[in-house]
Image (cartoon, helix red, strand yellow):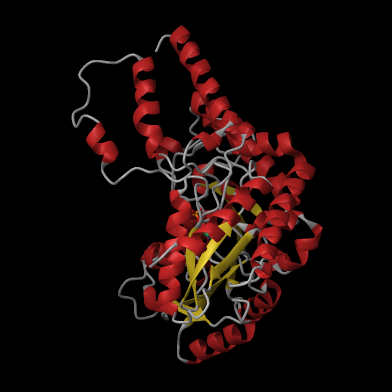
Amino acid sequence: MPVEEFRRAGHQIVDWLAAYFAYPERFPVLSRSAPGDLIRALPPEPPDTGEPFSVIFEDFERLIVPGITHWNHPGFFAYFAITGSGPGVLAEMLAAGLNVQAMLWRTSPAATELEEVALGWLRQLLHLPADFEGVIYDTASVSVLHALATAREAAMPDVRTRGAFGRTDLRPVRVYMSAHTHSSAEKAVLLLGFGRDAIHKVPVDDTLAMRPDALAEAIAADRAAGFLPLAVVATIGTTSTTAVDPVKAIADVCEREGVWLHVDAAYAGVMAMLPAWRPLFEGCDRADSFVVNPHKWLFTPFDLSVLYCRRMPLLRQAFSLVPDYLQTTEAAPVKNLMDTGIQLGRRFRALKLWMLLRYFGAEGIRARLLHHVDLARRFAGWVDDAPRWERLAPVPFSVVCFRHVPEGMSDEQALERHNAAILDAVNASGEVFLSHTRLDGRYALRLAIGNLRTEERHVRRAWELLADAARTVTV
Ligand SMILES: Cc1ncc(COP(=O)(O)O)c(C=O)c1O
């Protein structure tokens, strides 16, 4: 692509994105595509000859955009709402342009060192102690996999050499979590070869938080039965309801038992920046590993997950393997990011984190997080005050779980059909997108706030649409 053509097309794309950010509501938030629409619209064969970028871009607008669900829409309230913020998007453009592959310090010293600096800043903002070293991965799923692999390295150092399969000298492992722990922890257990039977689901209390007394009992019983208690995954901000496991009490148990403690704060970790929420994070300084996802609630374009680990040399011991062609010597000791995980090649993700931390500043971030919490509390208040609406969980952060209970309807299946119909109706509006969860067998609607462009009017509109749908849906 000649540079002049790149410049023209680049300006066109920046203009398109600026208009998109100025008014994302011109698109329905949830794509109205039917399965197979795009596949049918595109030729099955690749083009023989190159095409002008302008033609490709027209097809982007005509064919691709209708198949986009707009995570950057202020009416996006599903799952965990996120934002690809302006500074983050610009940083992504630069990172793509530079096309850095940061496997070794020398393959881009700035990428390696900026990761250290940005993660040092973030660590301070989260009030984690200095002995936590950070590393950037793509997702929290990959972060927990590395955390549990490191826990295995700690407990069974010879697994790296001898493997674990078919060994009778190794005790079967147990990993503790609750029914509300994200499925990625379970997947990590599967992938590490422990098998699903290794997962011990610890009971929760009535706020859906893990019970430390039950955890202690489970570990004691497992030990007595000959198992090796390997790790506990505690969550601050569970996926369904954003419940908070009591990390301090769990850390006491883990310390006493010599079990690895991984804290999953993928969504809510950023709230450690706010003094009023800090007590919820007590005990995190004693965790072995802690994950927070800036791509969830820190306005970072997808993807960027940070794993902080107090035992990073052990993680490197588990993962480092340096073939001859990657051996380097530098004038002083350096970090090579390829040693901190399974992947060799690494994107320059630190650039967007560094740029947006500078752009918003700690104060700016705190103010925006508080605004989201405030909006969620307002919505929860409307639910609480409305007859026939029921809130199904506490709101420690920015997610509200609730349902509509029509007069005379008490059968759970009927309630599920009714609330699922409400959800379909509001999502069909194109103005908002909510998702659902299930709590103790009860179907719950779920509204998550986390987009920078969400204002009170969007949340109010969601409430109006819900109320309209509750009146009109029939199942
Ligand atoms: C609490 C929690 N942990 C982990 C994850 C997995 O996140 P990722 O998509 O970064 O793997 C999620 C996803 O929503 C989550 O809610």
